[in-house]
Image 1: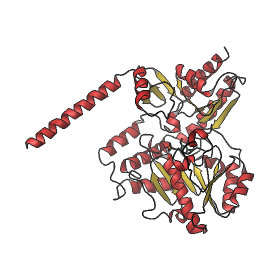
Image 2: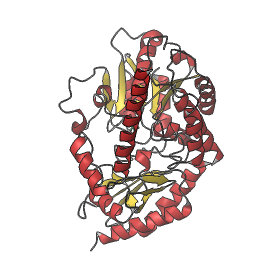
Image 3: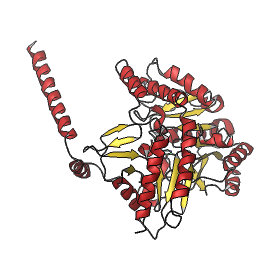
Image 4: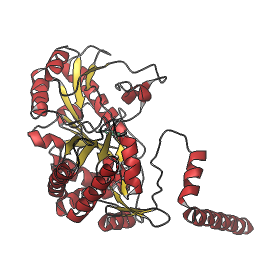
Length: 431
Ligand SMILES: Cc1ncc(COP(=O)(O)O)c(C=O)c1O
């Protein structure tokens, strides 16, 4: 009895201590928090010097209460906006009931989510994972497996072709397909079985797919991290045709472009093509919980048998409930249509307002856009810093470009406010 009382007191003191720490954290200034992060966190990012402390829709606030328009959307993940009330409600009610039990058992959310998402996107089965990079890795495993067991490729000889300039994360497999030395240098040896062709080059792809041991071509319909690179109209149709003709699987990495981001539910829908394997991630579970999903039909998924793949958290009840609610919200609130309409307005307002001498390039689809600053005036990073000072958050996407990927819930007045800020900041580069 005494032991239990002592334990209860210890736990209660620990809880008080954690609460005190949290209160202290939330009372720290932006400058103090930046110093603390710079001191204790591994230096794998170079953040814009702003601290986010609160969010609602497309608005973020720092600890001092300064308001920012969020035009990055957590790297294009916050599709449904910050702290969406329907998502908060689902998180709260689900987490209080059941969050994680693992795939050792069935839970009462995964089956319902699986039926919902497979019907939503028109595939037989889904394989749930957590992050986007795991989704890509899973898709490649599925393609290799299909290559050996259905296409008849000799053991250990399967090849997957990628587009140059790709980005699908920073795991060892992902960096093995990267042509960015910052990502791959001094991390070798690299994974074999990968080759690459230039993005948007169907002649090179045609040649690459002729090799009998190629099982898949994996591509982002619009390259995100590569700088929001939109391929020529017809590219995806030709990719589909070449893959079918050569008995090669078409893997669409729609981790960034999917879920309405480009003004269609999937970026592949712009050209009415259906990939054999579809990878989704980022905002799938409301950008509250990491969740990715790989979808395919039975002829491919049949090879993923018990023990061949898995993840402790993949398919947990909380992520599944929140993802199903997120997919419902995308439909209920017509976020795909909003992304299309707001994206068109955004690009056309920017075209009207921005001087071509300073910003020669405005590109994108839906709410996945980039602008490039002319090198005579500065870099994308310089532009992102000045935009932050003026109250708009973005991030560079290559040396000269910044990406502009706000939440899909953005309103017309927020687009207008964003364009006004961008135009004033760009004008300041002329002075
Ligand atoms: C197209 C694409 N695929 C995959 C990923 C990796 O996702 P995650 O960072 O969740 O692993 C990203 C991340 O930006 C991405 O843009």
